[in-house]
Length: 193
Image (tube, rainbow, N blue to C red; front, side):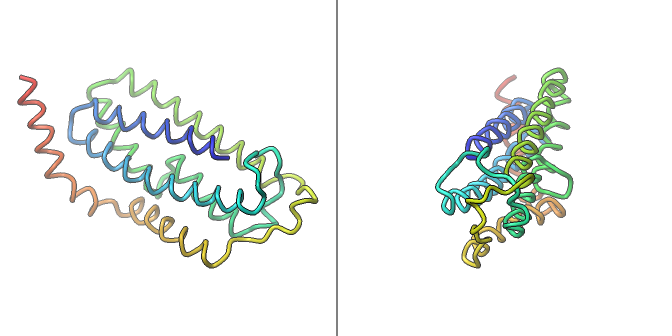
């Protein structure tokens, strides 16, 4: 389970590098926002992985199946976390990846097109993981698993709220970065000449 999260982190950081390499305002803003979003989403996913590992003492996704009915709240939170990591619209990562692609396409068309392969691969391994953990027949040894506790919800729900808030209304956080990013891009271009 943790390995899947690590693979998504590599993908997210690749988009950060692509945005920085664009050396324009859109790409750099997207890269900075991508780092912020990655921190929120990775935290959420590691907390969710920790909940399951704590209860089962195993990390293997092949040892599960059918947990969607056994742990419906956990399933809903994991769906949100996985879809946020995929960059679905109305979730925070969509905004940062869109800015990265818009900025990098101006400078690196071929690399931008090739980098979209990462989105497809990320979708493939997240959806396979969802299928293996939550769908199918629940092994008997997991019949007693309890759903997320209020303490776990208190730690995860604020991260979910941030993911939706930035995804639906990214304006304030982008406005906060714009002046600094413009100054940085101007400085880099001036130093390059």
